[in-house]
Image 1: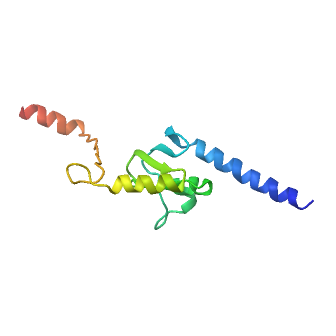
Image 2: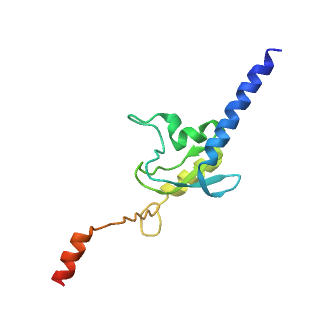
Image 3: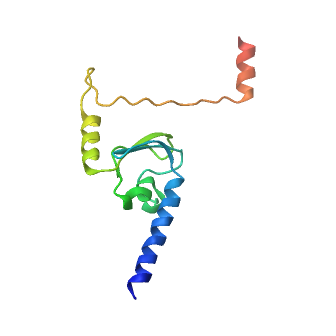
Amino acid sequence: EQEQPKRHHHHHHQQQRQQQQQHLDVLFEDEHIMIVNKPPGVAVHGGTGVAHNNTIAGLVAQDGIRLVHRLDKDCSGALMLAKTRVAARRLGAVLAEPTADGDSMRKVYWALVFRNSDALSADAQLD
């Protein structure tokens, strides 16, 4: 009779995790990897002043999903997660493997730059 509450308790946590994971914007998923669109302001992993539970790593850790690379908290972009140990090992090797130009994986960062209207009108007058 005491098994029942434990099972119910575990089931409740599992439902909570699934609900939290539904908040992840999944771009691609198969049995090996998951690629999520990480919004800015969300930490990938815990650190100073960041609780593990409030991170992407914290959301997926209980399901055996592993980080294979990171994005800074303020960056947005595609984040690859490995769903198995084998996938994590292979993705890690691919990310570290030099490409034809001697680099490892090529990373491209885009920055959006906004100018206020005063600067624009000043520039327009100079032109």
